[in-house]
Length: 308
Image (cartoon, rainbow, N blue to C red; front, side):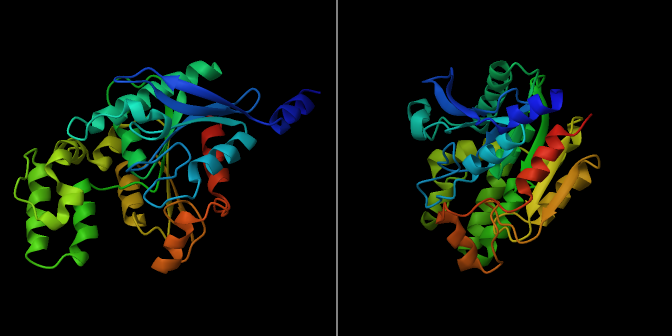
């Protein structure tokens, strides 16, 4: 009889509830998607840029990755809380000026959402599912007081310091002397110093107003953070990801031998099936009809729900 009751609970449609998180200068907004009697709850932390709670962005991303992940996890008994980032969507009023924003604001938001998710579901703690830059946010949230964090799921995250990854991405695209100027600026930012003399062509990345944020980001080393974390952690990486690679995933796994490393063949940065061909891969970014790659949600749910 008990097994029939549990099965019926899992078959019931999950309930979506609007949630807010007190913040300055204005509250942040998100969605709690919860099955009846959830077995666990997780906060989905978005990647870089103006990314909303579904994983979409005005920069041309309309794949609905976070919405799809939330729906798939709910089917397996895992509730999720996903939110619009500061300055985005319904959290637009909570945005700070570019010059005032720091990486620590994202970290504080992650901790706040974890506490809210646990409170809303009556569970003792929440998992952090960090995607792309959100993986580093999740890792940084484990510094200091993290009693509301059950464990981490790090998806498509950088496993090396930001300066190293950016140099790897920018190097092949920049001619000299712009490459040397950019690399010098990145080194200055990593050292905690502003870099006023940057090439105008790189203003999108290195404009003066964003440099304080970059300094706060560049101080973080994913390998150091994961090595210091003593809770459960899963590292998931697609092998046709154009933005992060298995080099990053393996760097984190090497720093934390107890982590579970999962590599998905034919899966890209947005956790969709995609070829290595760049144009075809990027085409998936704007196709909301594509489902998550098979196995991704199952692996995540299985890790979160495994007995410990």
